[in-house]
Image (cartoon, rainbow, N blue to C red; front, side, top):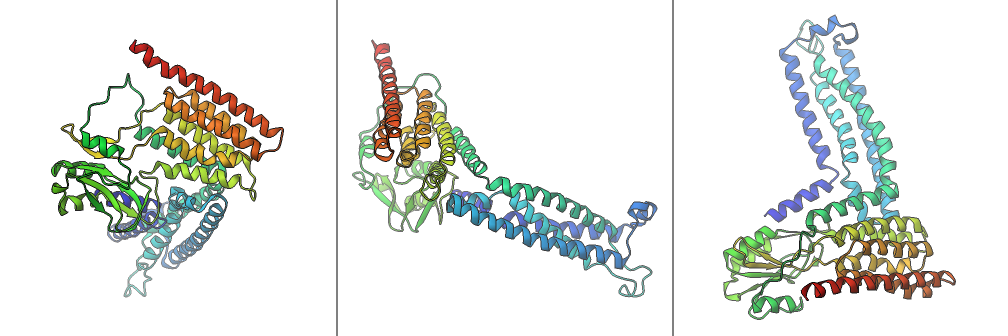
Length: 464
């Protein structure tokens, strides 16, 4: 249930209707409250202020009609401008960036402000009564305080319109788009991966069945395990690890996951393996199935690869022959380099997840530095190899990533990519550019491997 609620909350954050709807409801409540105040307290004090005198029925109707009519017109214009910006951004940067613009709070608040102001004026307008409509009353009913609030809302709407005119061009600027993705990626990395603290503890001796499960291919169930199969099709948006741990501990089971958040599953495919199978009854399998929330699209809620893939897609499009914009690709490489440099200084969580008693209950797919490096720089190597500016920046960024790594296996992964670039560039670039990139890549690879050998020798020297 928690996973589905988290998925629903993410969908609402990305929706273009939810926040404007809340603001419209708030406007309706504000209109009702202001009318009630006007009905119970007189607004005669306004007549004593020359710049704030009380309005009469005809004048109040005219003011509210003008404000309401202009607000709904501007709301339609705002919607049209937003859709045009979204279409442009999707065509230039990729359709997966559509959700970034839909979830933008500036666009949502702007549309909500105009709709809320229109609805407020409409509700207040219908309460105005002239003396004839009031059954022969002296002056009818004019909610002057509510009318004053309508004028204030109109002034605020003008301010929001000025903000919107600046906001849309700045948001669709390519550097702003890339920065938004890069900042979110860095924030999620720092939230999910702890920094290295002290010396690593030796690995505990695990049960033989856990070693077998870790070594077994994902498409093969461990011996004596029951398979939990998906009931629907879609992308895994959220996995509730707390529910998995609680369910596995309650039934005294071990659960091995077969997918990460962001993977696509089809109905009937195995989601997880549970063992021993004699304890994995229908109740246990249902609880595990409920920990997965599926949706029609990937989100960044638990899927770091989604943010990385967005940067990779922008860079790949920029390096395509039809666009040929290497400096946009360089910007993406800079942010990917910042993310990988930060990740290189952090500890990868163990795939073994334990309950409060220290028993292993969940085996997740490992998230390693090499996996994310290959997902980012590995995916862009072929595209960057055919462009001199991008290829040189690719190698420079790899050098910066290697500077922050202190583990031999991570340094070797970076060196492998540098060597890959030195082999691909001469085939994609004409001389002397190809040879220049190849020489720089080979030199970077040698220096990184030398440092990796030194890092690998440190534990052996310490042990002796």
